[in-house]
Image (cartoon, helix red, strand yellow):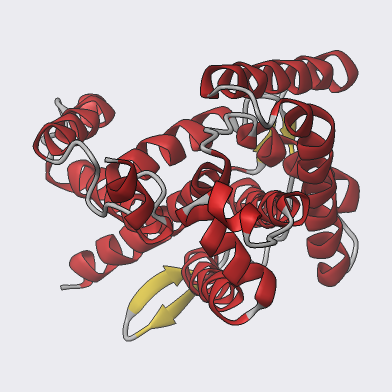
Length: 294
């Protein structure tokens, strides 16, 4: 029973991290139909910002990291994506790749490619005993913090004026603009929120791994993209669900696979993802906007 509970906690922690990154991808895609692969560079910039603020009080560390991620996200939107907003999806996709490679190579030139060790806090890596089970504080922070952040995003989208406009834009961006929705404000807000999600994700990721390098955002953004596709493109709920399912599936394969086959865990996970997409090519949850386009 203890082993089962531990595996559930591990699945929730990994799924929470995947859900954070997937939601950042889904937010931008829902409004702009843009798969922003440069989201990985937001994670990377936030991770390097942690190095600057390590040793400062917790509020300064968190707010400073989030500020860097949000400013970088807004700069990306204003400088790179706004001029090509009306272009076809292929142009937007190429732009996202161009920004991704540009920022990553600038980081390598300026900061170097050697991984840097970062000790965010020894406190969060400690374990606490709950009902006779040793649980990492970081896992608890990841699960609880992600739940709180996802709830805050949901309330923002449901209760605020700009949030309602973002939902309307995700349904039909052209019609929303005809009804008076300001495109610049809506898209900038979406990028800002994606920056917050990238910053929080970077804090949790660096706390887990203890190191930062220019490639730190590559794997998370690829996993986030897969989770978004599995959950359903344009569906924020689907993106979160896909993140938790992918995290749970990864932990499950780690537990059930024989030791000799465990190195093929990721290959087996993505084979299962292919099977899911073959049976449900539109993802687990099809958004209204996707049904309308069909």
